[in-house]
Length: 141
Image 1 (cartoon, rainbow, N blue to C red):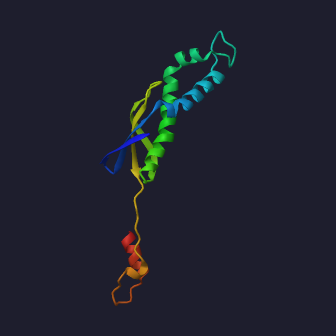
Image 2: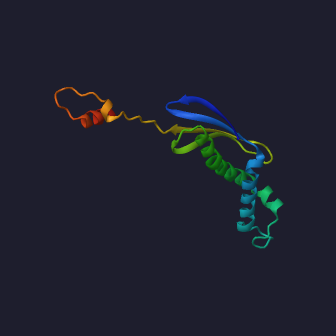
């Protein structure tokens, strides 16, 4: 999987990901198999619709499901590889998903902010007897 970090936008971070077809082919086959077993078409017994017919008739739906599945799985992995945790769901755009070709998408997310707490003994207090924990609370707010 290739990934490219893009510029921050309003607190968001963006990644452009590219995944070879070989990495998502298993997901594609799983989705087609699921369609074969659940779709009922006139002229075919339940679960006996030929794979080619399913692929032709439900091509758009299968590719849409594959895009969602790929973004959820590989998009999350790409964000984790950056070493940053994402808050909330990933937003995908500019999705390119075609059978036999590399999957491409732009994934946008809000990074989890890094909070650095100072040590209690590093906080200098005035000699008025103020509690250092109150100063910590004030700095956190």
